[in-house]
Amino acid sequence: MSGIVKKKVTERGFGFIHAGDGRDYFFHFTDLETGLDFNEVEEGLEVEFVVKREPGYDKAGAAHNVRRHGSSAP
Image (tube, rainbow, N blue to C red; front, side, top):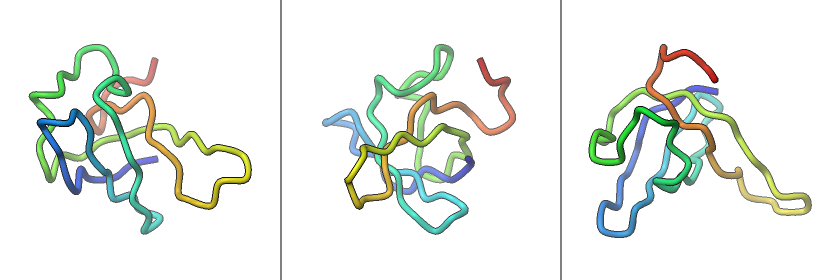
């Protein structure tokens, strides 16, 4: 899935990605792929990611394996 970093909370190490499906996905700095440093992530950055949802949890889910848009997938 792809989206744009909507909000980054630097001091807490997380942020939110607004995806093409209209939902916002939480991400933590530990969810970034190798080669993408949290300091390089800025609001407006285009990214690609995998969605992880918890069974029975109604929220959008969380973004994992976050990488720059157009980067090779692992």
